[in-house]
Length: 280
Image (tube, rainbow, N blue to C red):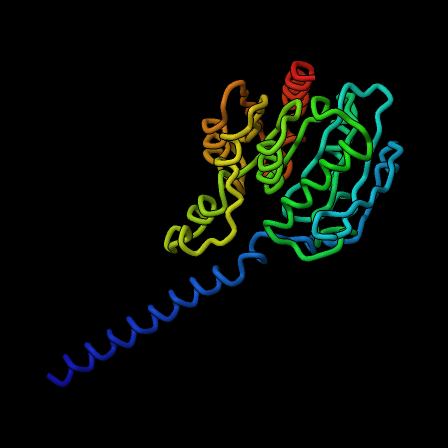
């Protein structure tokens, strides 16, 4: 009887430790969400290069959001531009880590306006979900009001986290088109894939609901995603595509999450070119 009591006591202790560990994991995910989503310091906030390093003249742009946060971006003009691209990057690094993409879009005869969200690069402030939407709106206002560009001549582009921000913005306006690259359908959806043993849908106070936003986009949509994406599963991209209204296209890429647009080579560039030419 004494042995049985000791075993029961040990099991209760193990159960209590397990409950505390599980509760601690839930608390960590709930309170540390911003650090799990935003990586402005990886590899760093310093600008390590500029478009001039790839032979492209550019303008340093500073503009202010509705809540008075000063943001920084680059405007790279193209003398043969058929339109303009508003570029929202992913959750790590800054605009200086996107020169390969800037070069591609310049070759596709587009002006490019790329910005750093609040808390990234040379932009002020602390990053929040609501804040990134205000940043996107301020960038749109800059192109429309300061540069005098018609919304029918603007393509909104977003990669990874930027895909959700781009989709939100496109759902509020009528751009020429929207391009979603390597995006996730929502934070809760991605979180559930990463932590299937946690009640992520209850814990997530960041939403970034790309799937919901894209349903409300009235303009043509291109969704690009790789089957071999090692960070955001291909199924997430397909969910976004299925949620989008017509007209829409899907561009299947190759390679991983961070190099898919490079690995896919001419198939990626040609796919973009066809979509851009059709909608500008």
